[in-house]
Length: 294
View (cartoon, rainbow, N blue to C red):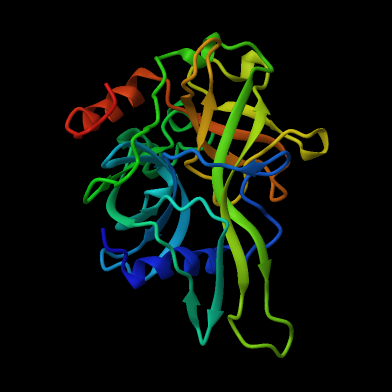
């Protein structure tokens, strides 16, 4: 498909607007490495359908040629979204107030939808710590047209899979974030940032089982000093991947939701998608999607 200049610029202008607030955070921390998972992409969020004003960015997971899974909190108050599967490092500069960035990767427009129970829990003011919220921070982006050239899609888990995993099970997290940024020095040209954005992944370990039962978040380690990865700004909506023994296919067990401090250290929280309610909701959209995996 044709990638418009507006959409290309949006990815990076959003990066500049938001990362400037906390330029120390990187997408995926600790023992991270560049990730090439084909179905993981960067999502840019807009407050209007015209896509002229980006308000944030996050990570998305392609479930079928036209359906992207992401975080519910990335879909609230959002009118439109664009998705690109360029893994990076995506280098950019700002010249005369315009972002200079070129890619051969297409950009796909779509409509974001938040999981209904998540919307209800936020509007009702019960979204902090309750079980509905911690198992419903889920959203979908319905693409206007099929993603091209991607033949491998994410695999959903069976209901209750997380409850069967022992503590310290190894998982893999992935997501997008700022890896490098140079801001203007005093007296320099305003908005003359130079930087890169990449898709990274890292190995983490599941916290003890009492934190991963019922409908609660999965909690994972986020301690780079001990060579354990963690999530950071821009990683919301990215996958928590589990590979069963003897299986070559990774399963998306949960999605990145939030970290408990600004330094992206300590414990990270991931919204489970292995609940009947969430899986039924997602599969309702997948049943009408063309080209999905059997």
